[in-house]
Length: 153
Image (tube, rainbow, N blue to C red; front, side, top):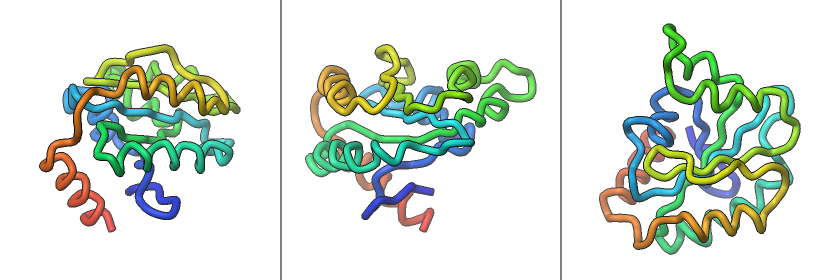
């Protein structure tokens, strides 16, 4: 279900399937996924909500290839899977006790740069500028995103 701040802006990663859209087999090669990792005991960053919303709306309204996600670091058990060999659990595990915001950046399922730590809007904007794939979203990507949002409502 999308996390809303005056409209559908962020999506919560709360299942293994959603994580696979960001950094698994279902990841799109031409889409930058920005993921805020937060600890369950402190929640997602309130200070970054409006700056990230503004960055996102500026890019998405232009149909740029950018998606913003939030994930609780405690999802590590589900991502590791029963055999402990799943994807993502180890990536999130180290941030379970982090009080400051942590942002990860993925294109085509691969982490493209070091994490951005703390309230660092210029740093995040720079990474987005450097790693966002060229071009615009295809119509089917835009329609699929809209259909997914409507289905979740």
